[in-house]
Amino acid sequence: MAPDLIGCYLIKKNNGTDKVKGVIVETEAYSQEEESCHGYRKMTKSNKALFGKPGTFYIYKSYGIHHCLNIVTDKENFASGVLIRSVFISKKNERLASGPGLVTKSFNVDISFNSLEVLNNKSLWISPRDSTLKEKDLIQTTRIGISKAKNIKWRWYLKNSRSVSKRLIGDRTPKFE
Image 1 (cartoon, rainbow, N blue to C red):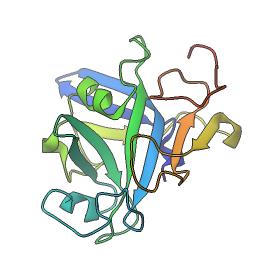
Image 2 (cartoon, one colour):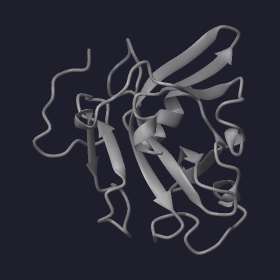
Image 3 (cartoon, rainbow, N blue to C red):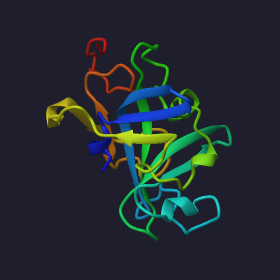
Image 4 (tube, rainbow, N blue to C red):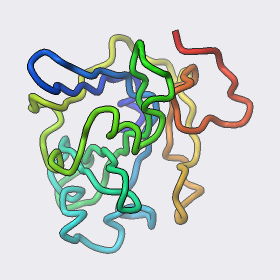
């Protein structure tokens, strides 16, 4: 699911016709079967949404400061999700949403979106990408910013994007046009 979200649009309707729209360019997957997942040990009040219905949002605060936007995947009562790490917003600074906290700040997402449906939501949703991505357009690598299960390659990003939070050494692709 995580690589399938690359190239899709994250859209937030603020009020009336005012919208923020961006292309998802970086994601990470998490599963309760590995230690870096919030649901690894058990369900708690704060991670309950991660065990919820697939296709809903799971929002949490990282270090008690930044909200992080996730999409619940797999099945109910099993903690599995995809973190939206970075989004490219056209006609804005390409680094504006280049990290999980910057994504939620740019889209004004907070805990109030927790457990809401991704597709049947009138204020925050994801829409399909315009075209098919080829495998060569994606880079798969290890997740970043975690202390456990660091060797699992469950992070994907769009190869030609300068909006990702951290590119691999040697990935010096041109500016996103």
